[in-house]
Image (cartoon, rainbow, N blue to C red; front, side):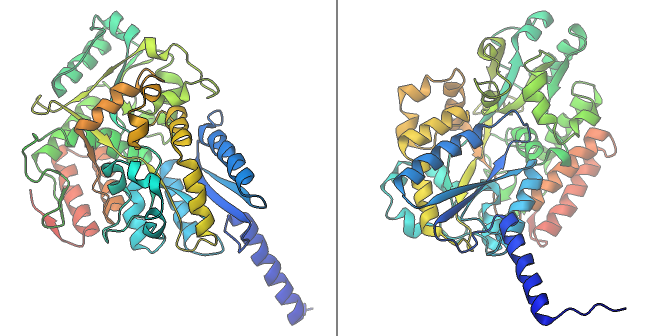
Amino acid sequence: MPVCIRPAALLLAATLAATALSACSGGSGGDPDTLKVSFKQSTDNSVKVMDTYLAGIRQQFEKAHPGKKVELIPIKAPDSEYYTKVQQMLRSPKTAPDLVYEDTFLINSDITSGYLRPLDPYLAEWKDWDRFIGSAKAAARGEDGRTYGVPDGTDTRGLWFGKDVFAEAGLPADWQPETWDDILAAARTIKEKVPGVIPLNVYTGKPAGEAATMQGFQMLLYGTADATSSPADPMYDKASKKWITAGQGFRDALAFVETVYEAGLGPDVSDALDPNFATRVRGELLPEGRLGIALDGSWLPQDWLPGSGHEWPEWSKELGLAAMPTRDGQAPGRVSMSGGWAWAIPAKAGNPDLAFEFIETMQTKANAQKWYLVNSGIAVREDVAADPAYLGAQPSIEFFTDLVADTHYRPAYPAYPRVSVAVQEAMEGVTTGERSVAEAARGYDEALKEAAGGEVVQR
């Protein structure tokens, strides 16, 4: 017998369903007294750095804004999944939060999609904006010249190495490679003399996502030309506004990755292609002395600080730091990449004014400095960067802050996310041995042309 449902019941069911969707989706929901803040939560259950920091900011904010409430909406996912979930949330006013944590490499892509609100009217009235360094401001600026995010720090990258591993291998405690060959030579020595230790980790492949592109490939690629090369950026030609196909530097970078994995100098391929391998590097392999050299970022100590869940008080004594050299030691002799994250207000946010007030609370000098330290970030406020308390607060801060002088930023234009995936696919091909360097480079060129609409510069 068919079931008959009255129109009123249908309306009620639809209303309840919509209410349930709004309640669980994290959207602003039209409540002017509740600010919804979405952020990336660590996939490691023991690491609650962002959660703890934001809880403190929420307490400050609610005390200064009687009657207002802050709802924190953590998204626990690897980077690539986080980006996808955020973009899904930003599409509708029912699901868009009031404030969202954006990786700066996605800013232009999300601007083009109409997901973000320009912040220039707010920034014009905010005196602290003048304290931010120009490169950090540029990282959150759209192609239209407007600014869509407030950066909460930047980062740099270099080589971490285990001093005990180096001592056993007969390598110097003050190691500073001058070329790529020096790195490979050290890795080969570790393989020979310290069995059971992974000589060198270079993130690779699609599962690693942007870590492969930025910590791995770009740290190589941007070291293949000297300071006078034209174009200065080996991936994107600003003069013609076109992406650059795989040239000799690109192939050299792929060849380095191929050597690491073909010669058994890196982790097992199955481990390297595990999306959670970066968590193991920070939480197990380095602290336990099972990794010799890690091409990685300035933020690693956040996992080792008190209260992090992976406390390692001895890390600064047991790990050494070296700048990543250029391919042949050519000027300027070292290379780094910088990125970072920014707080942005979605175009469909229900409470944008309140959201910017929350940004202002997070970005007072005291709160910004606190975040840089607990997150092992590099300051983007000039007043914090010059503060002796900041420079002396953690053993690695001065080293990584100094690398800013020779750092590069990704060409974060709208096509970049697709270009990044093409890089990861090329890396994965040579890592697994399924593609030669030449085949992987050709595959990249084909994917690049598709991502760039056919408009590329041939190299």
